[in-house]
Length: 182
Image 1 (cartoon, rainbow, N blue to C red):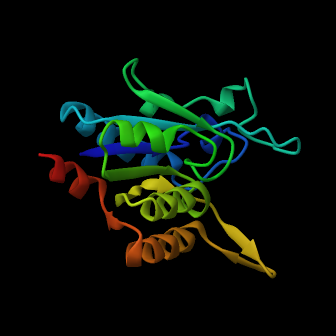
Image 2: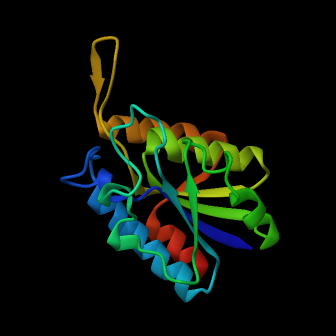
């Protein structure tokens, strides 16, 4: 059985938020298509919401509009929301137990930030024995800097998807993933 896991598509990642990502709206629109397809197929859906408890955090602060799940992928009453405090959606959360209780062996993933929480969660899911399918166009990231050089978000996205697609996940488009549910 396959479940959809939507990682951290929260208001702070969108225009006007405290950590705006490149292409966040387009990625969330694709995640919304996945969400609709999984709902139609009556497959399990899990929303992951990051709430930062680090004293120096600047976004996803508790009880702020920025930490709320974005309206494009708002959970329905019967969908599980897992709150986390670390990049890995499995660390100190009930996600693993919830997936195992439901008999989930395969996970479709979408979310934000590609280079942080999506990467960490995908690798962890693979290590925990799940078959992973990652919707590359339903994820967003940002420019990164290292050693005086800036890597543009599009390059960051490509590099992470290429790396994850080598071993950890089948990387596919939203359209391909939705078609596989039919």
